[in-house]
Length: 499
Ligand code: BG6
Image 1 (cartoon, rainbow, N blue to C red):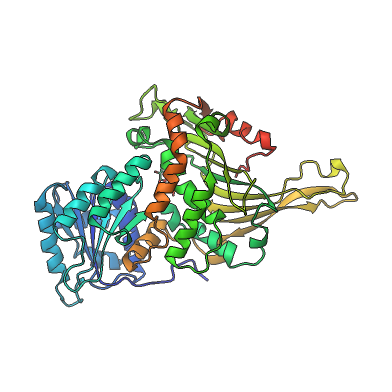
Image 2: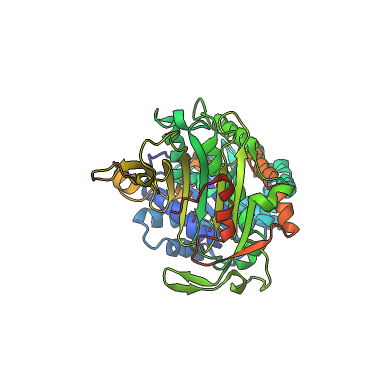
């Protein structure tokens, strides 16, 4: 078996990329597209129009596309030779008129059948420009397919607003020009194979689901740990912080899949309905509980893998007196029949000891241990740990008899590794998401009500942060976060499961 994508083939279409000279396009979108070209997933006549303010010719853009994927196979150069480029501002009608002209050329049947009036607009721009581009497209009729075409879709990237109010305003603007079913909101965590595998693990097996509830699970942990700092994005991060950057989207999406009720089918509406139902059942701390149930922290200088790294306040683009959080931990509960009373602990941070995203379902301890106390000292509760990344896999932790005369019981683990089972690394998230947007499968994209619900439940915490509480804790880069994060679990008698 291999881990290659089961290959769908895209219909003929023109992909119009706004922000074509930017970082996301070069780092993620072009390599994903090149990989799809290599696997034969792209229809022969697939067109690509790059749009950005940078003054490039078609040839300079093609050159950029080739350089962005230095190890691409020959198929990529073949596609890239037909790429087109429009240099212009997004508030200028001339930009959209030029796009229209090129789309008409690409649509007309040539040797390879043309792009048949189908369009996918990818907004790899800063979010402040989403509304402007959507309006520009609509003014020129580009919110509808071209002649003979079947679809015109709009792909946007997080952040979707800064809070509930701005998220709703953004959607209102987008909905003036595009229907909800034309909008594909990307949260790249949904494109990760291991995140999708949460559904396979839960619903394609009969041994996990019966214990996936309050009767057996004692608590749930979600950790999204990064060893990187804010890199070159200091000024962006200053206005975001960990709550907006990771918790509102990636953590909530992973939680939704892990804790939602089984969906009867894999139909996109059925899955997204279950996710949003779960998000509606999450009880985040209220404003008066934030002091006890939320930890907010920032990294100090420290050492990661033997390298000295600066503190957050010394990063480029960061205010030396900044109070932006680079770490958040909190205790949530889920008020529904399945999860009532089970604490859900989440934490995320930059400059932690190790890059690791994991979900740990930690089971209750046995009701009675017949072994003498000293023989089971240190025995950890059973846990099923979903290793989302890196080292993708699943760990089942349990107790086993340590060889010897007495009944000493130690903690051991059974491991499943994607790499060993399927050979090779799982495909990049963007490859899957781009392919789904092109083929029109919205399952892994975020619906407007999911975005709003995730903001709604974090709103009291955002307000508390803005008012300066809980106090900002500090942690050394290279640690597992501040002491306060460990204390968050103490009242329940638990500890974090560190990767
Ligand atoms: C992005 C955040 O959404 O996710 C970044 O804006 C973060 O700050 C990144 O580094 C993490 O993604 P991954 O796939 O490396 O876990």
